[in-house]
Image (cartoon, rainbow, N blue to C red; front, side):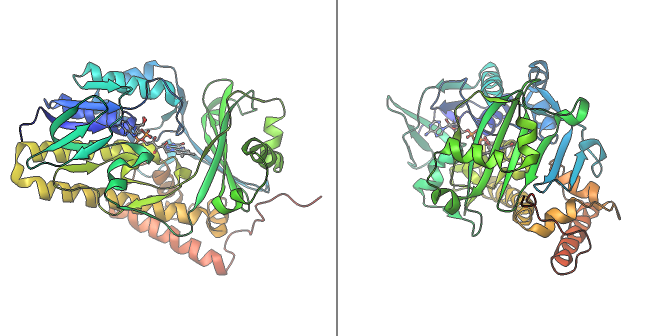
Length: 416
Ligand SMILES: Cc1cc2nc3c(=O)[nH]c(=O)nc-3n(C[C@H](O)[C@H](O)[C@H](O)COP(=O)(O)OP(=O)(O)OC[C@H]3O[C@@H](n4cnc5c(N)ncnc54)[C@H](O)[C@@H]3O)c2cc1C
């Protein structure tokens, strides 16, 4: 098959834009399709410091820095009962790679990334949905409503639409992680001054948790995550469920006494799924289309952008040395699955009470707290000195289940 493009990318979110830019900067001919026109609303607003090095590599970091997004210096975990909270500043993490990331309105952020891809030579088609992908010998053919585009490889970054994984029946769910989120933006939510006012705040209640992400000096993204089955059993509207959830916890309600909601209430279900294979002979998956785990630790964009960087490397290797394709694609899959596994373990732990009791009582023995902090910063890597600390942390959490090394918490306010 005669191919016109080296790589065709589906989706112009952070994963697609980043991979397309890196490939174009390596001299590849790249075409990208985005079904929407930007700017558009998207959830997923809290970034991790580790992604800053990828944005520097793709040449977009200066534009992100110039856009005036809130600088994020860490995260905070609080208990719904109001009796405990822990702050994690990135600067105090285990061998930190940076002291900040950003809290971003995705409408603006995604547009910066996509425009940057076009400025770097990517042929960007906005408002163009990929309707089908075919695999004739020697390449791929992407079909839109108007025409077909022949390429050597396709990189699917279609996000939670999971275009290829759904077509190839590769999507499975994780037991026990069927969650549902309701969220909106609010004006005038109270927050501390200075560095503490930039932190992502996660509040863990008994059967649900909340996020608070400062997006500007006055605006905040706020959401609640619950079991899907529990939400489906509630007769109220999504607006009422979110409002009643916020009102049920003084640690949320008190900060929101003067606030007003300034967007509709949005909902996301289909939380946490696994994709059984991240590549075939002519295709790779990156970002949410390669798997999605509950973004409780703000890992989504970090994983998407890391996947984009690694996938661009694997595609470059395959284009330069076709004989190395199978090996480089396989290596890509193994790397990504290893990182996903680390976050999956943390997400599963988050829903166990003893995990929250342990992180809210951070006795800093053997630098375990900085090691947990490193995961919250996306600073994971392969180092043994980090992995044994995380293993020790998991052991302490395991013991806490049966023997209270740290104070027990109710995670909900005392009944009146
Ligand atoms: C409730 C919730 C809260 C979250 N909070 C955070 C957070 O705080 N921090 C964080 O890092 N992550 C968070 N995430 C995760 C984050 O939103 C995603 O991980 C991130 O957006 C993934 O980027 P992506 O590029 O893979 O996919 P997306 O950003 O979803 O981009 C995919 C793009 O593909 C396009 N597309 C889809 N199908 C087609 C098609 N057929 N043809 C053409 N284009 C197509 C879509 O229009 C979209 O623009 C959250 C997610 C949810 C659901």
